[in-house]
Image (cartoon, rainbow, N blue to C red):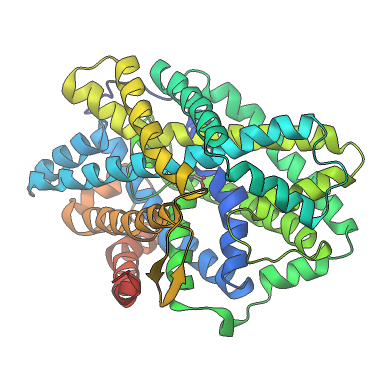
Length: 460
Ligand code: PFF
């Protein structure tokens, strides 16, 4: 098939650029901040195993489907879904999938940039030598003092939002390629170096045991759902982010090979972060289940102690900010692409508008870490962390998996089979059939069962 549609927003210049951009979107706070703390909260090994299975049999096939839809539609997710539904002789109401994605992206961005703001603040603290001499208590107190100050959080949240808007306003391609080319290798290198430190704590084996030795008695139904949701979150799936990146992908590029590369890199970064953090946690008597502060409390202890900690600590948090930045860009791109396409807005205006909206919404998260926490029931337990948790559960546990399920149903049941064969470009051999079976039967069914199974966990 020849190139039928062209993207209004330009195209990635090569396969490598797509891989870098998609990896930039996938690797972010989800890998370095969220994966370790939810693993800690859910008891380790068994949770990690479920997460890895979800990546392999649900995440990767749906990621291919999402990129495939994006590349075929070549427009913002809302318009792509409408167009492809029409092409398949189905209802244009499929565009609601794009809408849900836009809303999910905005909701995630609102808290994502608050957490990224913590990392920005920690860059300065690390450079300032604030971590020197930290033990578990002082590192905890330092973190506690930061998050309980709404002014500071709102300020760094604003800085990070502005950084994101700046890139999105120029178009996601410019700058992204160079940044990610240097960044990803640097992040791997630094994580490898920190792993060296973790080995030296004497608790490396404990860390590995916690991460990779499954104890199924610690796995709850809530944990399984969290693992599923995190597979979507970490791969940037189910809300149109990867679809919009797919829409800028050249026709000749192989979807399956590139997606495998991205998913493997993403998983490696998360596992490496876990292997760095848990030995430090155990060596310093910290609680694995201490929640969203885990990384921000454990790593500063290590940086305060190691030689060259000032440099490595600063560099590490700079890289975390960059990783978050390249993800945040893709969180608001679907909304911005829509405003440009459908409202004829200039890119800059659209990016500023969405950025400002996300910043205001983010104040809810800012406040939830200080004065606004309240109690609510989830999964039979009383939680007191507040709105941040509500937003996180709503988006990553429900919106992204449901969005992903709809994408799988569309690719597996609505689209013409011949069109999917044509887009995937691997012929109709065994590889294609495995993928087709997974998106047509396995993924939607698995997500459906898990969600249905957990409806009783919802706050009542
Ligand atoms: N994948 C990103 C991370 O792991 O930090 C977060 C994310 C980006 C989620 C883009 C969803 C998304 F559309």
